[in-house]
Length: 249
Image (cartoon, rainbow, N blue to C red; front, top):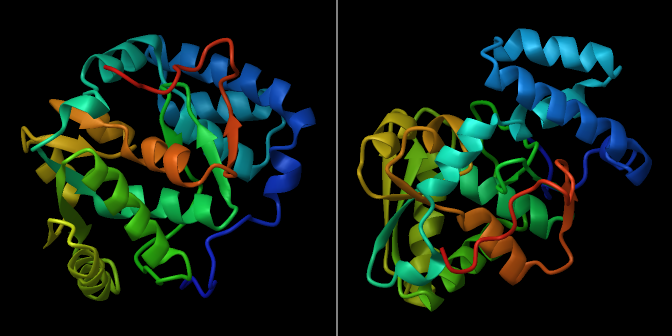
């Protein structure tokens, strides 16, 4: 179903699903799921097992699916993370929809999840259609200011099969032109393999890419922390585990 919202804000179920009272069970469930993944269980089977064990609803299961990671996966991802201070003069290859949707959600007051690997992720469900919302341009401007302040340029990759990708590409270039951001945009059939094999610094929160990419930048978290101080961020792994924000490498 096409997205008809003018904001990418709070889902009607999220206030209850991710209320403070729900977090202890969710954090226990995330730890269990991450342990099962580390022992080689099928992600689908492990999620069903843990979700049933803790009687979780669909939104909560979706959150676990996006935020769980084995210890090995967390270690691998962090070892390939580049510092924010090291990207001056570099061109960052951006997983366009992945980064943009998270920043849009934060600006709209929607839920942002701090995952076990320290990455910010959202629960947006876009499918094969993208609709520009009120926070699209502010989100792009926030991303641009953040990268420009670090002296970096950007190459945006968008999924060509997604409806309105061409319009979004034009909006990205319009924002870049207005603010003198040094940006390029490319529409490709699937950004995932391009990003994984690029050898460049990649900005994404997509676990499948993070597990293969040579180097990556935690851009969504960086932008939200810098530009959206009042964002609704839920630490799903808990303060005793979650990897803190990267500051120096």
